[in-house]
Length: 114
Image: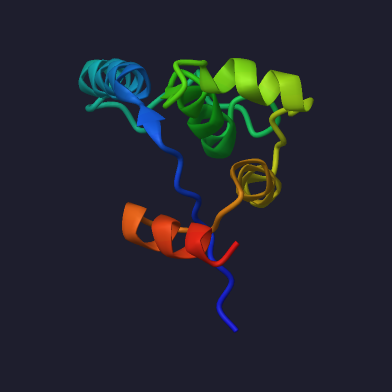
């Protein structure tokens, strides 16, 4: 059995996208400044405090739900704390948002079964 590693959240995530693009531009700037050196510094990365899963969750929290409430506010009310493990974060998102859908079609199908 394949376990879905997705969750569909209805809302406006333009703030998440904007901040994510800013992070990418910042990395590309650092890359260009250091491209002739042996290593490309990514001083923002930390396995414990700033890993890819944690950055993704921070970006997700910049979104707004259909109700207008921020994702961050909603998750804070649930008692959510970002985990070092992406799998734990995903499982919690699936629980809080009640689905494992990868798109709106799957989301509607799952909701109709409830």
